[in-house]
Length: 426
Ligand SMILES: *Cc1c(COP(=O)(O)O)cnc(C)c1O
Image (cartoon, rainbow, N blue to C red; front, side, top):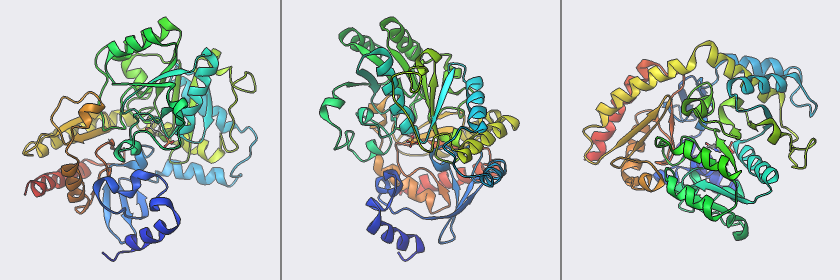
């Protein structure tokens, strides 16, 4: 196929490993080649060959207001005229810190970093420094960025590429990480009985191995076990934070973690992460405490301005309410569209996050997600893409609706899904 995208991809492969700067973008899981973006606005993306797509990836989460929202672009533009980076404290850092602490009350103090990976990594170091214990518990399929200690039975790209453990991660380090099936409280209790645990890290709503949900009582049991044994509970809300509700998943489930990792939405599309929690723990960070953590570009003014503008705009337009309504419409219509599918498809949704598993339900953990028919998913993906609907190019990712999606986008998408289901049945 001669297209500008495939020319660019060939050039990229010569100079960038796999032609991409993050593995899932390579479309390997759907046996394809990525398209290259020309521009994006609202719910739409245009590629360099002039094709238009309704986008349900939203830059993998940050684009909750859609692409290039005016409020965010204006804030970045205005801030840029006063300097791009200072490495000196600026008022926007304080404003964003105050806003996040107000919306997520478990966070009394917060520090800005540059990615979700950095946020999760820093939470682990801080928890180990605070408790003086090295062992941590994570859950199969939960992804916390490409942190050495957390690349054990992890989700996202690490999962779809069939290499749950990365080369280059020391065995001795991985040995300090216990990975358990999500939603299994008995195994959590057992692990606590048999080990001195410093911290438990989890995605309260796992969204990097498809999308599934905590069973009733799971999160509160983990919370209780941590409290009982003096371990810290870390919620990785890099994806769910400010998306599923103003106060994140911790607000929905009413659980107070000790530390929270954030990212994606809080940067409004610029590279940002953050981690925060109880003041007593956060005060262990340098320069006050013995746990070292730093960043040349952390608290970057453009990133802070973008994040602030995005969060304020979300609140101004009552974004979460809007997203729930749109999500409900999508769910209702999508369930109709997939009903004729021969093989079972399990549809999961919370607010503006959704996933279509090409497997029968119920799906409550990684093992369930892995029952999916990946070939059928790949065919469905391509059938939708060629009709102008861009879902994530992997079964093990979550779809996102933005406030820029319209009812008619949803209706168009459902028509496409219906045609795709018919096509792949042939
Ligand atoms: C995306 C994600 C990360 C990693 O964030 P990066 O900015 O890609 O480093 C960590 N945890 C969760 C839950 C994520 O969804």
